Image 1 (cartoon, each protein chain N blue to C red):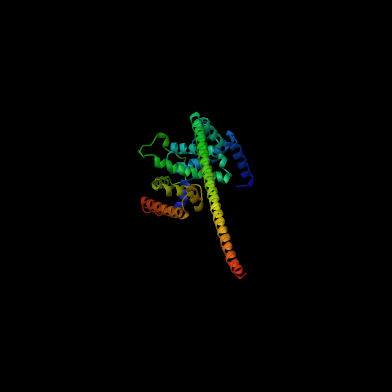
Image 2 (cartoon, rainbow over the protein chains, first blue to last red):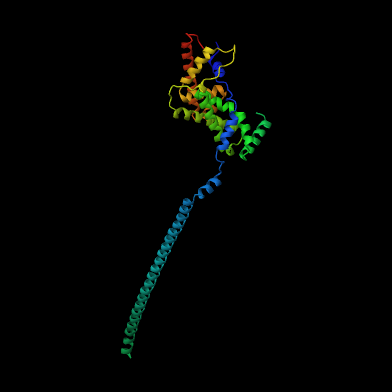
Length: 125
Length: 184
């Protein structure tokens, strides 16, 4: 008796399909819808009117929302800039007033000091 | 396969990708025995095997643009046939009935064959679980290496090796027992 490997090879040898197999495959092929590429599938998708309108509406909605968000962001940036500008002007004004006050005090102190130095000389004369 | 033959297959594939039906018919004619036999040995029903084989070729027609070479084509056909056959077995519910067209044609007289042994082995192979059965079919029908079987079935090579070893041991034991203790 032959080893089981040989028996399996004999048992499982290739067999031809029933006659007319190729013709039956080709007949089924002719009833198949034509092959579609990715581009064709995409265009077929857009041929469906409801979907076409839905996609158009979605694109418009996204554009409107994006516009609103962008506008709000610009307004926020503008408001922040104006607030910063006002704060800077206020700070400059305060600083200016403080400098004026300091100068005034300095002039006053200088004037007092000059008065004190003049008085003993006048007494001597 | 020679380089000339490979070039011829590449040219046929290119024509087929361009929608040439006669080129596709050439491919079907060239590979019909391989696809049909894998399905037949696994499913045991000529009509279901032909149905699966037709489905495989129609699927090939739809994705022929992605086939790069003759070798890739053989790999693709074996892989898809293997998976479609396993899917078909899992989907179908065995009802124990056999249609007339499912009965194999009587074989011609062949003195080198042992019809009794062949019939028993045929039945025993049919009792193997799905994946080991498919591994045995690919190994012995297509003379594929273990790593090739693993790639086609998308399972680890060690699983293929152990499945085939276990299947052979099981077949040997059962066949020896059924042949009245004659070792095979």
